Image 1: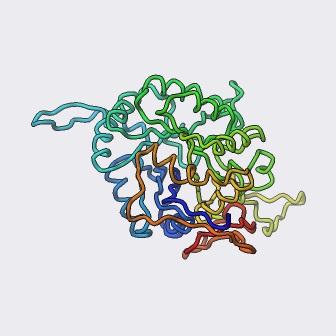
Image 2: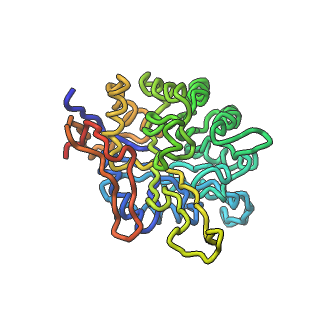
Length: 383
């Protein structure tokens, strides 16, 4: 095939940030061939109210009016506060989270994202256990909204938990939530392990799973030498990558595209090193000052997303599954049909066209290196 046409691709996990960074990356969603984007709420401060979500959506639509944005809330400890609301002229006490879910559902917010505390970008206000939030999950279930789970647990030396096995340890929580809320739609986000794939397959139709393009390419061997490959959850072993590819190639209806495209400025991806230009009076040659800084977690794929997925699936012998993975499965799970005004997206083969080295924003310091920068994908979107 030299041309592929698929209906209205959707990305069910994308980070669009704030300020100058958002101005740069929000139009990139459409540039990458995506018509519908499910937007993550881990801003600063996090989006915990319907008003915040709708305000953010309005900002995004100004930047990219041709894209459909589906909004989410951040599962936050403030949702466990008891508040007083007026119902039929009477004052009633309810959990803030339950009240917020009712409001959010009426406003069209689609889901709520759970981040375990401290495991990824802007997750310092995440949660530590799930049971206290069961009334919130019940409200989600009743409103037909989705619970999106970052599927890791925090590292713990005593329990031998690290970034390499944090997802495996999380799966017991997924199984319990799926059992306790059999009618609640639950999405395990950005799966990275064979165990996660097998777990999702073993659960009911209410449990779906997003898979990122970069986890279909990377294994742990590619991460230590390249900060632009570092993400949370971190890429795992070849057997895990194979399981992810097999899930997509099988056309399983509960696995679908969620890029987890997460832009960070170059200065945040390349750890800050000490300034070696400072002179020292010490005879030992030592210099006081700040030491190296950590590398931000995130891989950026939005501007080349659909050509990237086609490139990956063709190499895996599963190019015929591009439509189900990028257009059909996720929309079916979320109940988001193709808008009648959305034209199909067509990809064509191309030679010599490379992924840009980086994208530069209008403001100094807003520059991003995309995944597989400098590589030829062999596909481009027909404009």
